[in-house]
Length: 353
Image (cartoon, rainbow, N blue to C red; front, side, top):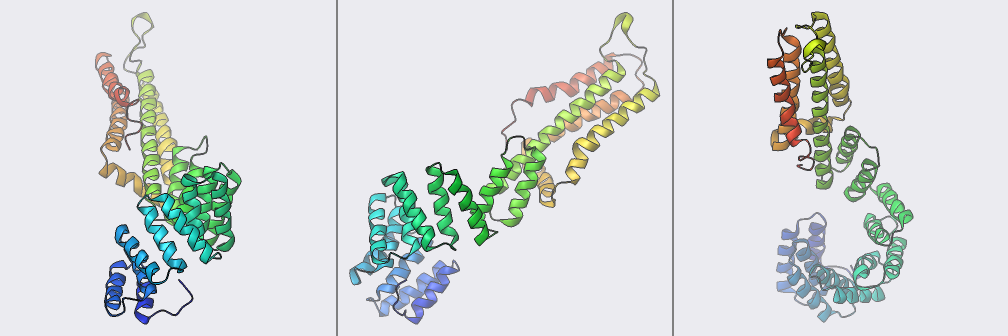
């Protein structure tokens, strides 16, 4: 805002705007403007409130009205450019922000807005220079670092990308944009397991609980973990099939039923597979990731399918070992009943969440 003093109701409206109570701010301004239609600052704040409500055409009209009353009003040009950008009128928006910078060169807001638009209506170099200027005038404002990140990424400046994330987290450790980016970069490193990724996303959500991006990524990481349980189940099925000698026939066939001690040993191996492959890994997850496992299974179809297939294959393996089979027909049927459903979907359900 300009250096002039604001009417009390305009100040109150601006405070309401800053806490996202845009409707109340707008109502207060409309009452004030009915009495003082020549208050250019009130028209500017009205443009802000209307932008907050995504009523950009009306916001543009309000900014234009402010500029009619005070053509050299930097904030009026800034809000005009802001509304024009949301209306996809980028060349006009860039010109308005350039005018705001001319009138108030020390402000970071117009520079940040202009830098992001120059990616599309200017040159990469000019956009980067303007983003660096925005950071220079607003080094402790997280939005300037957001802008520098976007422009630096467009310019393939990995050094500035890293610096932008680091500085944004310095200013606000719970900044949703920076937390999301930092978590994504760590979780997508080559060789990161599904469990490790789920832990990272759960940690990111703890810092930035409003990030829908992180929430979706956590769901996908947990789904990868659930898909992994099928391989544990199929390993158990293979252990049981070898123990019971399901497919050996002729002179090399082992005598059935398999000895009790052998079957107990196979059951112990199965318990170790599930204990170390699933339960131990699950217990080490963050609470947020653990809760997501149950929530995802409850609300989504494919996680239930995957978990059901793993459970079914494991139950069939248990039946192969628990019953002292004297002939191979039933064990063979159980084996195929467990194997086929998993094989039918294991290559087609990778991206279902």
